[in-house]
Image 1 (spheres, rainbow, N blue to C red):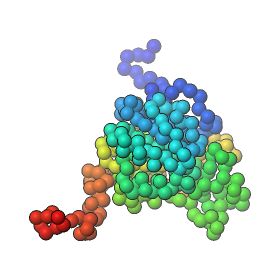
Image 2: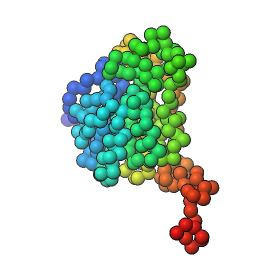
Image 3: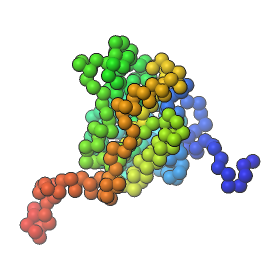
Image 4: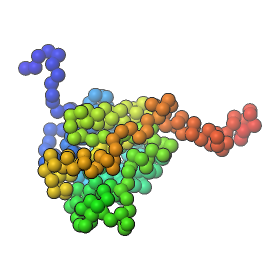
Length: 281
C-alpha cells in the first residue's frame, strides 16, 4: 500500500496491458508509453484517435486504449486529416517510422504539414527500415551499412539523408517541431514534455505539430541495446541535432496561421485590403 500522496509508478491508462511485438531494446516501447502518458495527463483518451503506420509499430492499434485506425503504407497523414476534419474536436495523432513517413509517405507528410492540418505526428527515426529486414531508409546515414547498402550508403548514388524537422520548418502550416531522443532518463523527460506539448498545441488549435524521436534499432544494427544507444549518440545525434526547430507560440504568434500571415505581409494578394479601402469585393 502506497503512502498517501506518494507518486506511484504504474502503467498509463491509455496503454493497454498487452505484450508488444517490439524487439528487446527497441525505442518504440518507451515512446509508446510517453504518448500514453500525454494522453492520460491531458484527459483526452475518449477523444483521441491514433493512426497506426506500416512498420514496426504496425500493431499499435493493439497497444493504445483510444480509438485506432490502420493506414496503408505512408498514408497516415492523409487518414489523420480525414479523421480530424470529420471530428474537429477529436485529438488525432499519427505514429510513424522513417520508412513510412519519409519515404513512401513523404508527399502526405509535406502536404498535411503545409496545409496546417491540426494533427500531431510522432515520428520515429532509427535510420533504417526495421520491420522489413533492415534496408536503407531515407534517414540512413552516409556510409551506413544496411541490407541494401552492404558497402555503406553511397551519397553519390543514393543521395543524402533527409532531415525531416529541418525540411518541415520552412512550411507555413507548421506550428511546432522538436527533435528528441530517449537514451537516458533526462532525455526521456524532455521527450515526454515535447510530446505532451505537441498534443496540447492540437487541443488549443495552434496547428500542425511533429515530434521526431531519434531512436535505435538494435536488431537491424546488429548491436546490443546498450551499444545501440552509444552508436546513436556517436553517429546519429551529430547528423540529427536535438532541439526545437519551430514553435510559433514561442515566436509570439497565437497560431500557425497568424505566423504565416506575418511572413506574407508584403504580398498584396495574400493580404487583400478590406473592400472599404479599395480592396477586392
